[in-house]
Amino acid sequence: MAEQQPYLPEQGALQQLVRQRYRQHLTTDQVEAVEKGVEAVAEMLAKLRGVPLANHEEPFTSFIPYRRED
Amino acid sequence: MPPNVVFTSIRELGEGVRSGALSPVALTTLFLERLETLGPHYNAVVTVTRDRAMAQAQRAEAEIASGHYRGPLHGIPYGAKDLLATSGGIPTSWGAAPFRQQTFDHDATVIQRLEAAGAILVGKLAMVELAGGMGYFQPHASFTGPCRNPWNPDTWTGGSSSGSGAAVSAGLVPFAIGSETFGSILGPANHCGVSGLRPTYGRVSRFGAMALCWTLDKLGPLCLTADDCGLVLEAIAGPDPADPTASQQSYVYDAEPVGRRFRLGVPTGITDDVDEHVRRHFEQALDTLSEVATIDMITLPELPYEAITRTILLAEAASAFEDFIDRGQAAELTAPEDRYGPYARTAILATDYIRALRLRGRIAKAIDALFDGSNGLDALLGPSRYTPATGIDEDFRGALHGNVSDVLGAIGNGVGLPAISVPDGFTPQGLPTGIQFMGRAYAENMVLAIARTYQSLTDWHYRHPPGLTGK
Image (cartoon, rainbow over all chains, first blue to last red; front, side):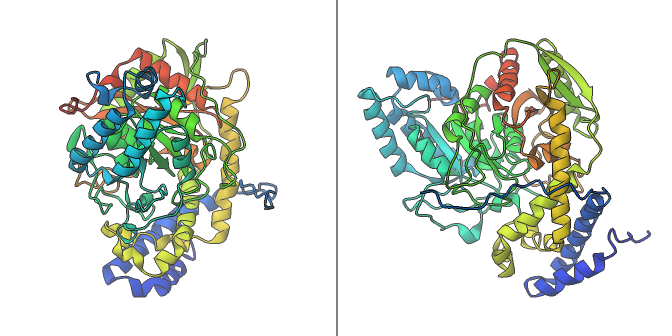
């Protein structure tokens, strides 16, 4: 069976990043599962990146500068 | 006590309490006993709050006797999902072994508001560890054990508000508070055959609730009826200076009929991949609703809804538990997959997270347009879940049940829209299925009106798990 092509060009780098950061907490089997998890994340992010955005499309959050109410 | 009091609606119980026919102390004693004797059968309970409950019940009884009646929840027992902070040494475990002894010195705003309404906290209810945010895919994901469905204990309640669903379904509490980030109220409501309301984001203060995803977390009621959900929502909703994301809009429950035919929309393909019983019940529900509604098939704009909502969820969950994950404490969680699940999401880059937030704006405007205007829809409809309750030892997604997309869940949770799940039938095996009505932002009264009308035309919500009635 043909190996799944990376969903993102940096997928391998992301897997390495997660491995390096968390290797001490994971068993060998868990490392493999986490790498599959990064693959799933990459697949998800590829879908997001497939939708072009215009400059005026802002993040849909609202920030209100904090001031303690008297 | 009237017969079948454990499956009596809040509205009816409240009338009994107000008139003096029902004693808050007697009700509380009854539900405490059921939580203690029946709760363990379902792994539905973390802590029975007996002392606090009896004190609240005695106070309620004295107040009502002196003419001080607080409203329909006065003297009514309830359970709270164990991610809601409760003071007085009552643990708030978040369903997770590392936090099983955790306590807070304050009550969550929801708990405070229910106390002000005179409701009586009888128990902290089981939940999936850390509200399911570590990636679980099977029911054995809580230190209290897999939550068993009162309809068939060899099946799962759904999660992550698993104990809340089970407790209401089994008549252990008249209502419960749950939470939903992505599916955690509607799922248990579906599987347990009860009514579960996910309010508009920000309608209910999240102060004192464990945060999984600040952008998506919502608190809401699970009850026997849609009408009861409205009564509870009024008590818990409203502005809160302790939660800057809480809406400044107040909420008043309006139980009056809308007085016209509803306008409902069904997204094309919404039942393509669902269980055959789920599909049949949904179609039957549409037939029923056609008596009171115009129902149109609608085509949703093409957008990667699930990817958008899940990116936000996973990135924020990674942050909410970053220190916990960095310390390697995920290894102490119950579900094997939760012990490694949270690590992969740290691969989400900031630009991707922000991209998801930007695309969220597109969803919000596109979906709101469906509701807007004089010919706008009153609600979007779909099955609440794509299957009835799954086996207690089965994966509920992945190899066994597939990864069916949940478009309405992704949309509704992604942009904070209210939705209610109510039962719409039973499988030949006796498991409930549900239909969801999702409305415009802040249109809980419309969503509740549709659900109430549906429940006036059906009797699914009057059915209860066998063998659980009694005094």
